[in-house]
Image 1 (cartoon, one colour):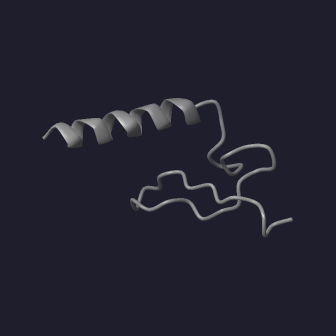
Image 2 (image 1 turned 180 degrees about the vertical axis):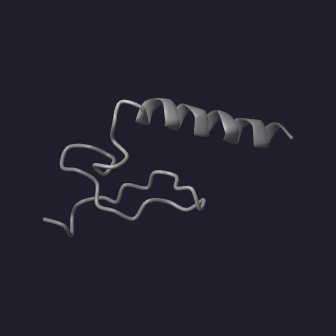
Length: 54
């Protein structure tokens, strides 16, 4: 099953993406799929939009 499971991909402190396997039925691993995940993703997207404007 692990071969078909996707990777988490959440932004890490080092700037890369998380390489852990995502939880079954979720897009993130158990470390990155908490209630705050939506907030973190929105904040990351807003930062990317700010970079695109400059």
